[in-house]
Image (cartoon, rainbow, N blue to C red; front, side, top):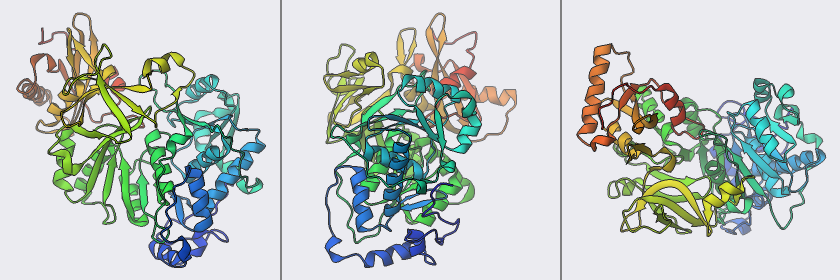
Length: 554
């Protein structure tokens, strides 16, 4: 049985779970009442203390010594206070050391969003192990292939994942399941961190071929944030997307450095999200554009809304389309919404709040103060304002390299700048505007088409809820753009009405786009597949489509 100090009962009251635990200390009280009572007893010498921490593990140790009962990480089943999280991390170090893991050694993590994921990562940071975070959608074959590329000899996962993939039969290295470990059997160790530090590796893509391992120094996750005032209740932040993505792990580290509470969701369930927001009095929510679109539909269908505690949404993973920005502005005028642009290789690049959307149409904001962004042409030269090229970024938060791939690393990193693979331009005021991904650019008879431009036009059409445009190979024209449309009315249509709707959409495009940008075909779909990052899976969509024999362009 996994060490369970801090486990919550499924109600708004906190169940007792062991001597000294936050749960026991607050038994019989609502969480917010208990937190207030605990903070009133804090020694005055700690109130208002604001000391920047060297890294997130030291922040946790500091909070554990000052306010051990302060809530740190919460999932659907478990809540860990800072004291418990600090102890869990120490016992994970003890377990991993007993399993033969030494500083610099790699460990594979196949875990969904849960409190123990955070504990293992903190242990790795503290003891200079190298965690390799895996996408939970990887198959046993994917994992075996990745393991062969790494120096890892141990995998930490859950019994559910192990059973689903038949790991015992398909993997040759050691597999440990959370449910079968009792951390109480292992000492609480401080670790033996070296001066050199270690890395965190993310193998989380794979939607465009073999996934690349993104090697990020652990120092990158230290944002040098001052801790919150020790005399105030912690702010609760809900993370809807997986921690095996860099953006969300970074968010978790930032929250913990400030002494906040990380609320984790392990499922894409709108009811569960709203309940977690209400129960934990969440003020900040991080999600992807697809999540926000689905949540708005859920609100429209059920009459639900954000709890009054929520005051800030952060959208990551992909830029918000203008049509969705307009919906957010109309339906949530009093909520602060931040659209954040970044990549796994660079971290955050730019962000823009909803109070600037109207004045800066289509922009993802000004590049952050701690980095330098330029736009380069195909010859590598910097381009003037409003000329489209690839976005390159210089930042201390960039990745170190691609794991075991020096060729890809040298192609991506040049003079300490990283090529993002995103196309866009900077305007005269320094705001960044994105046009699309280089790899998604459609080449139609030598004419370049940005899918996002066509998608935004389609999303503005009557009855269109969402649209994705992909390029399909064509023997004469190189590629042809094909549109996948999800209508607001999901009912099955007869042939004539579907044909009429297609002609209506094509006419809509023809009136707003150059002729070569108009899709060659339109396909209606019930759902647009997304990957674990919440982005449209263009490759899966392209596999569904067939081009018409006759085209209308050229």
